[in-house]
Amino acid sequence: MRLLIAMMKHETNTFSPVPTPLARFGHGPGPLYGEAAVRAYRGTGSGLGAYLDLAERERAEIVLPIAAGAPPSRPVEDAAYEHMAGVICEAVSKGGYDGIMLDLHGAMVTESLEDGEGELLRRIRAVDPATPVAVALDMHANLYDAIVDNATVVTGYRTYPHIDTYDTAKRAGEILLAAMRGAIRPVMAWGNVPMLPHVMRQGSDDHPNQELQARCAAMTTEGALAATLFTGFPHADISNAGLSAVVVTDGDRGLAERLRDALLDQAWKDREDFVYRIEPLPQSLARAKALPPLAAEEGPIVLLDHYDNCASGGTMDTTVVLAAILREGLDNVAAFAIYDPKAVQQAIAAGIGAEVSLSIGGKIKMPAVPGDSPPLTVTGTVKTISHGRFRNRGPMGRGVLMDMGPSVVLDTGKVEIALISRHVEPNDLNCLLSLGIDPMQKHYVMLKSRIHWRAGLGAMAKAVVDCAGVGVCTSDYGELNFTKVRRPIYPLDLPNR
Ligand SMILES: [Zn+2]
Image 1 (cartoon, helix red, strand yellow):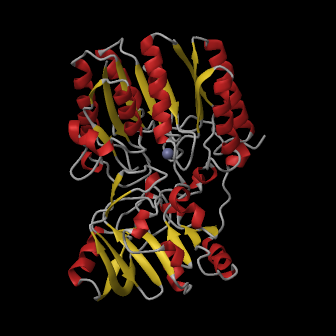
Image 2 (cartoon, rainbow, N blue to C red):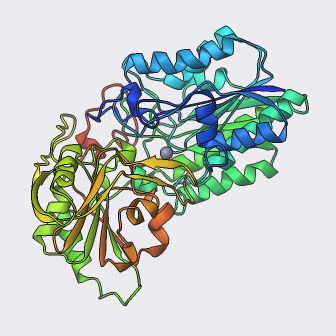
Image 3 (spheres, helix red, strand yellow):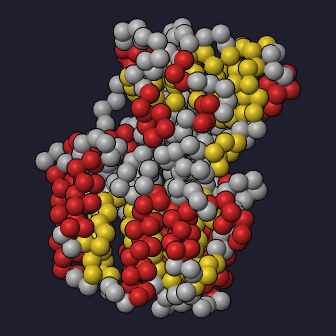
């Protein structure tokens, strides 16, 4: 057996100013290829890790032309897309495969394309119309006809935070292997409803997504090979942004359609519960200060600077929430993180133990959203200098090497501020521990995150306070200028009926 395995992942925030060249994909100067990619992902809790394990179990020969994943940002540069899709299609064109297993995201927009994944699959099918193709997608996929039409099986995550990337790819791969053996004949039905669920309301431990994902899982006892409810990625001004569903059955299209409709109906009925209510920042911080004092080792109060989540396209350099924390005099705080490669280099030049005054953040303009985030001047001691690399302890992306780039911690006396040089969302305890910050010793931990922080840090939080700052992950969708998304769409246009 011979399998082609590849990864090409990006969640595109069309309102983000953060560029997406090829160098953003993967570690160092670009994606990983061939053996280097196999070495990086074998044994990890990633989608590629699952495909590689399946291949090993089946004693299959593998070809892994490229593993490319970038943190969310603006549309992918055409040259980067053409390179990545080109490498995959060139490998496909060599032929001789029994199956193709792809780890994709499903919300990749390029400078020229709304649906990067659909175009990749269309090109693969143009080269090779016959070999079965498995596609594993993120729960934040924005689905298109071309994705479903050109794949044998499509399935997506059931958890947010995404702690089932491995299980999702394994499910896609197992269905593909069964199809390759001729044991099943997968058919798919997909559809969407005109709604943009708010990301802060999409957590799979919370109503309404918890029940929707449970329903997906239960459908495997009702004849589905796989059933997926994609909450979708709303910060994308493209026609198919929003909630969708895809159901795979063994040859029974009618059943696939009925189960798909059940998921879409349930989501539409719950649409009001996917709407997020914003609290003004001063109110949030007052609430945080008024919380009862913590006992020793009780765990910190988490302050979520969710408007600036780099894993949704945020610049990670807005300073509004951090400035308010400093102004309000909150004590014993850790803040993760401000993206500022220049300030990092200044702190490194000063050296450990040096007192420095730095102008941090506020350097990336955000023309697509209102609100100003000026640079913030802070004075403190350089506490930590690090190369910024760590391995995830999990449960999210267990074992995957993360790279914050050169990183420092600046200690103002009350607030320890992590400054980093590459975008990494704080979803793993090791992003803090690797910089010498023990969150259990902190009264407050400010995180630039929305839901994923819960994966590695949720269990320790004594309380959580959402802090509305400034950023391209603005929680007020009315502030975003949607021109391409299909209209009308809830909650932008439709009344609560
Ligand atoms: Zn996602």
